[in-house]
Length: 151
Image (cartoon, rainbow, N blue to C red; front, side, top):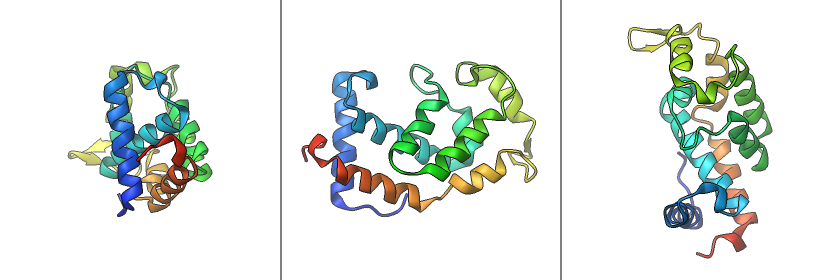
């Protein structure tokens, strides 16, 4: 993650504390949910690419469109499109709910503990992994919704 301003960190800490306090992401204001989703998704992608993102199981197994829409909400339209295209690589319904099947599919693209260069996920991983623009857009989104983050 790119170095962020103190306001960003405070807003993120607030969002995470609210999630812990409330215990249900759906009960939080939309801007707080978006911040949490982008932070989770982009953090995972930055650490291991889309393969790592898809290997992860999120609480309540949300549809991947939730993450795509969160990227769109912060203005990351190209990144949202890349994620949406990567989701379409799964040739079965509801991959977000089918961890075993998802992992079997993903395993086809691993070699020697790493991801193969010819993985169909690679072009989309390259668009998302290490993308500092996402963090900048998230910081701008937080600034635009500062009233929701009383820090």
